[in-house]
Length: 143
Image (cartoon, rainbow, N blue to C red):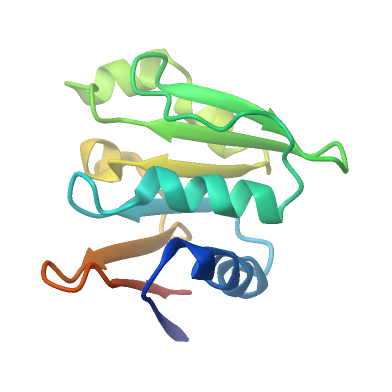
């Protein structure tokens, strides 16, 4: 079970972390991003989408819950923000299993809200911010 740790001191290093994650996924399509409010989950997803060839505007789907992006290779990426989900039933009503079973990359912010629904093959990426220096540490494991 490989464990990855990447530390950065600025946003200019996000493409390196994004590429490391992409290289480690090995056909896994579910990525759950954990971190405190303001840790950089959405910013990282923007960098990740850019590395994957998304040319559309990438924004947090806080109110819509899910956004869909297309890469320049015609691949679909789904970006979820479960922050406003109150119950698992709400997640089921939007059809999360259909998205997750699609084989498309699914990037999820605030996965804690739907953790009971997530399958074991989901990759959990945690972003920790050093409060004084602002440095970020990205950690994930591939099961």
